[in-house]
Image (cartoon, rainbow, N blue to C red; front, side, top):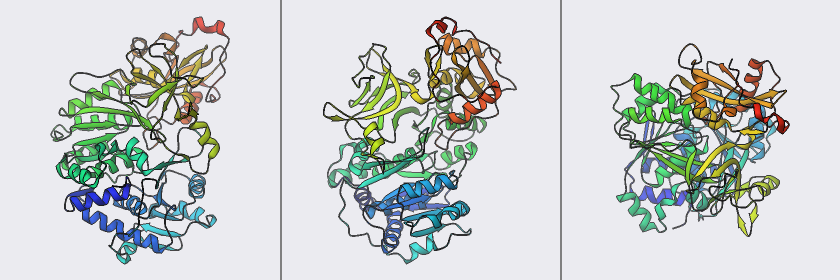
Length: 551
């Protein structure tokens, strides 16, 4: 069996053709594996006749829906790759991604026609344009369903391999988006659970036929890797993917969809999804959420209070935290349930995951040395059209190729990894380093705090001072918040100023928008925006870093 995304999907189709593969919304569209395969075949035929073949790229500029899934599968069948386009991009960002990726076709929602129309004439490589929806279209477009109706339902007769490329554009926290390139066989191993070790067609058929049939609802957009990976992993296990088509999170409808479709696994992205979902479930006590057995978290942290609330509303479920990146796949994992919740940010690493110090040597467990998370083994090939960033991010150390992330961590004496956060977001106050993730976790563990973000703003004495933006459940910041935080973190990490805000800005992936937070905090503090990393003040100022002046 070739470890190829299209080949494995077709084996599943042949094994369980009549099993439900995909549900969109409250039954607006239901597709069996055979029906989904036929639609993907028809789209592949249309794209092939439009000149798409091995190594080409097809942009998916779409909300959640069957069309996104079908576009991925059709591309894989042709040995092409999909370019995931963030639907929040403005014209300049859209043009950059389509140009950088050398996209030769685009499948787009007509709600995005105005933005696409601004840039499409400046993209000479962009050919086929398929429009989803009833709105106005850009010149040269064909309606998506018309394209499928004219396409052949027969599978493309193409020999594929595990070396075919999967592409994932990631925005990260700084700079323009980068296209992360993976071999199919590597993304299967690193991001999709490795098929439980299935290596032959017979093993894969048995896995699908005899294994657990889960109903998996990713509460996140397919334009991000987390949703793509869990959807593909569900298909390869013969399960059902349930998609919410709502472009913005409606936690009430999400809770109702989980109940209506008897979802057994729900993927969330940190507190940005977990908190409103827990609140929505609490407000609807008659909803039957008993089918949920796993709450899978990826991409952002879930605070202990939110974990407790979610498990109280879904008493048959445990929370499975994964830690990783678009370039690395899954680094590590931790599980909460049955009265046990690991320390926030504490994970059990994979065997091929390490923490490397400044000299790119493994950090000794229990040493307290802060390094950067890294992985060897099946990792991404690099960044599309960017050999310099590829060389910097994927160094070869003692003959072994690694992905070295910007995430800082320490290794505890028991071998577990304590993730501190992204180095670019680190606050340097009086020579002490403060990682926002840790302080945000302490803030959000207060029962009256719904959400929080922590940044550094310029400070004449300390270089930077720690400032918090807090979304309070009540009318004001809790009076005991400072005392509460200091019970969880060292005094110098406690915010010296706390500002109440109505909401904090996050990307659709659920990850915090620290650029927005620095600007907002600086505005409220009456200062200029802080740089990403301020220079350290003189060591003599360290003694007073625990002083506190809450707003």
